[in-house]
Length: 451
Image (tube, rainbow, N blue to C red; front, side, top):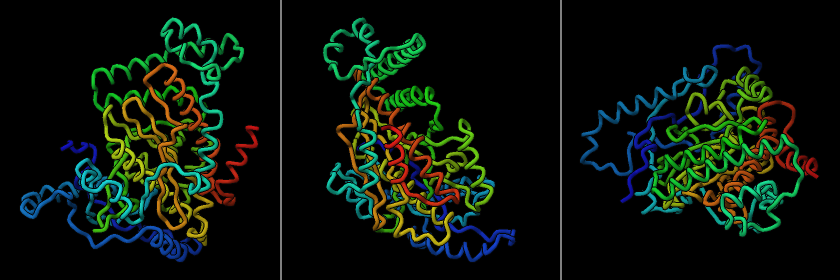
């Protein structure tokens, strides 16, 4: 039986309630009444957990429960300390109580594949793309990413490079894949740098494949791909490794027994105030005026204070696609529910049940199995369930060839641009009091600018 992924905590302790203790300052107008009303809304969005129980693995047996009681207690204490209020200076004070977890690992998946998530509260459904049933925000997102994709992504300047590196690859490249644009000397210099980065990614991925390297080696390839785009982009994104971090249990789905289904992803692209002054100002304003400074479902002191744009789950060549997509779906569900809660806490009187579909955009992410990058889009449905659709065949990319790497870099650039120009304004308006226009306004504005 497959070995359990080491970054998944088998035992964890966290909060079963997401209520701030009474603030010391009573000068905020109507503070207590507002918090009471918002707490009621939050309770509707986030189902209450069952009564506290000893954190346990689904593989625990009665015989060994007493033997490892002391070990479990120490593990729970350690986990509780990582969620303490001191970790986030302006964040809430947690009431820490133990929580039982179902680990999303290979053993669980062999017994309960997608049915496990479908039966959770809220339900998470993973489906292949279907435009007839696709939610509007996911449809718009796919439209923007696929418009002109796989066309003109190879500069004609690279023809000689391909001839020298791999003439057979040049024969397989279709004419519509080349961009005939005339280049300035500076642009040619930039393309030389990009070619070198592409060769590094291609060579590293080839070595991973040929030498049967593990997921950590493949994660380095993924990091190189993301870094090539993010470094050359003047946007507001940064890469974060979150494979050892936990999602707060308040945002995890619950199985039929009330246990939180525990899973995490490997990498996220987040909006960074370190590289963008506008992002930094929005973050600072939010933290100074909110008793809950967390913006993502992560419990980590740093990534918990950032808005996340995209997630990536990595597996080595031959890894299990179902496990990867289920991990991604659980993360997306947590991110969408955290976004829902942020709106409730920021905007008094909002009817989130009626407005969720208009205000909460779909999230994009990848599963990476060796060379293959598969794109998924997850949406919050009006009934509170999560729909994760993918992979989108027309948006798949690979690192198995040089032209494949160039296509992948183009796709990552499209996601980064969409995140900076569309997703960030949507998330920003959820934190500031200038009116909630909804995601459609920003999609249409981006489309108008492009035309």
